[in-house]
Image (cartoon, rainbow, N blue to C red):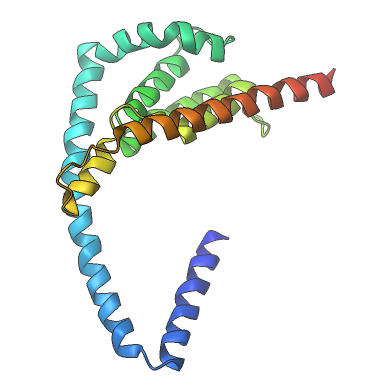
Length: 196
């Protein structure tokens, strides 16, 4: 559905530009945007490569296991049925660690692994378990302590202080996480109440 929407927007924009006589501006925008996209991709590729490598080193050195122990008390309350030593719990911890460091792209592989493991624990059914719902909310809200991707983008566009947005990022991501978890927990309880 989203592909059709984007296709419609692009086609509609081209038609409007031709009708209004702005086809030269449209051609300039297309070529300029393509060059900007490649430049942005190259900038982000270096940052993503660095942080992905650091996350791999952290995983192999046992740092993620240490983080799992630090997060375990809070995560155990959110995922009460998960064993702390399970693969799903470890993947969830790695995902949250990457999100805390503002590396959404690096958080994706452990997030997919966690969802796959949670789905298997749920019997492979089509209905999401409580743990799956909570994890999706946590991953989507993604509390960030150090928004590295945002800082890299701001720096690439000439910001002299790319991390001056730390406090607003902390406030907004904490608020989004708190609101999302509250709604998810209430929804899970209501669903259980209806099932009884």
